[in-house]
Length: 535
Image (tube, rainbow, N blue to C red; front, side, top):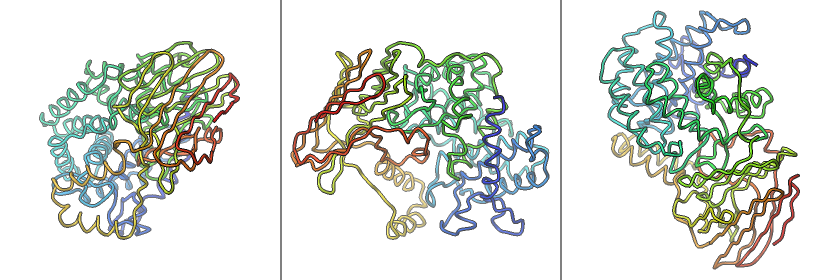
């Protein structure tokens, strides 16, 4: 199993190289954004695609029998071309764009600067125009020093290791101090329960990414505070491995279902929670039951492919520990709203602050119910659950939540919207302050959680040793036409979510035409996952 990560990523390298403009005579030689250089369907290149440079760098250095890219001169030329193109698309203030022109993206600057700087550290003697590249990295570092984005803490973790790498390349103390300053800020934001906020709540995939970047920083600095932060985060993450070998889901703030493996492998050298996670993660990847490079679209293959090579390099060779879902316990994280119940029949995770979103794993059959709450149809309008810290919740005598549902904000790009956005961004949006304001508005529209609407919702969850009962009540001033219940309801824009897993074929959901103002639904599940429905 020691090469499970390497096998998974090697099979995807031809696809990754297909994203690259490999023509040395082309002005976009080295660009990994195929939509830009080949299809001509976007007006600017996404800088995050250049993170694929690090995947090629690691392969170039990796001496393994099955790695045909080891010390290959053509691969080295692609690495240099990718680094050069990254520098060409940098903004005058040192930032880079991901989603739209003049975005001045903190995350893109953080993550791409880490990938480029790490590649240079690994191949310093073989990088063309090194001094020029260092200048680009210093500009990126200066941008990161002057900006933060704690809305999504994984981005700050990425900036920490990027700044530290720039320090290693330049010996300029300001980058080292800046990395440590951001680390201290991140430490203050980390919750006592172990998680870092991602749009107001904990998210499983993004937490594993934050752990990964912190492990990279700890490996180079041996900073004890960083190690403590990693341990604290792992003590939370360990609970979100499921008996069917999947991870995460709708109970998290951003709905992600992947685990970034390299930091988990690295931290398993000393941390028992990491050893528990690896027990399931390695098998899940081997059996195709977890999100891995083969599940990813081209964009995220470019973004995180290198973490699988790093996981191979960090592979922990010691004994692992059985996953926590094999034990019997009850656990409540009141700050996040999450509760976990494990007995010999069920493994149950719910989030009351996400209106009772719940996942039930039936251990005897390995089936699972994944329920994000009801979807309510009233005419053309649809309402669903959302993350809301102000809900009325209770962890006593079962689990109870009461609040209102959100009108689902389906947002799609149109030619007119696209024209207006791009016209604005190439004029007024060139101003950094205005650009950041636009980003805040777009986040509010596509990701951030809003106040509920007129449809009220109550849910009670009762867990016994041999059955689980879910009682829902929906009350509306308008006639409810239809209710869909018992399935996941992703609707916010999270780029690294909604990938397919084989477990997605296993579901419990019902579509009910009701034509009522008040709907009560009761579901009971036995130890085999058999359901009784009353409404």
